[in-house]
Length: 144
Image (cartoon, rainbow, N blue to C red; front, side, top):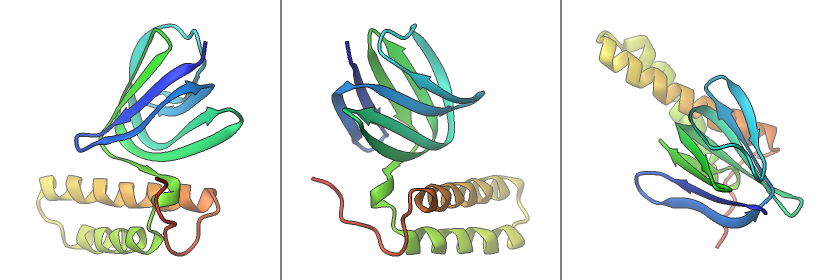
């Protein structure tokens, strides 16, 4: 029996599909794979790449952390933020990285420093995964 997968952020449902063969996610203790009939569990996710395989095709997403629950061949990801790799705007991610690096040099408050470091980490993850997936230049139009 294949998996049903839903990836949700506070703003919207990013992905919702039935018939998924496997999900590979960046867990807090390292990358893990969920296959059909997997034992039920809940875990935290680290920023990184989440890969979904369905019918031999792979979809990749950048997530910036959150939670993943497996129950009855259903996977629900509650992500802090999620973006399909093909939707990453490289120029925008580079600009976010540059701004975060500049802001790090100017930070004096610890709370501001943590937020700025998180922004830098998000930008770097988006760029790393886009590069890994062979993305260069401008973003492709979103799939409909």
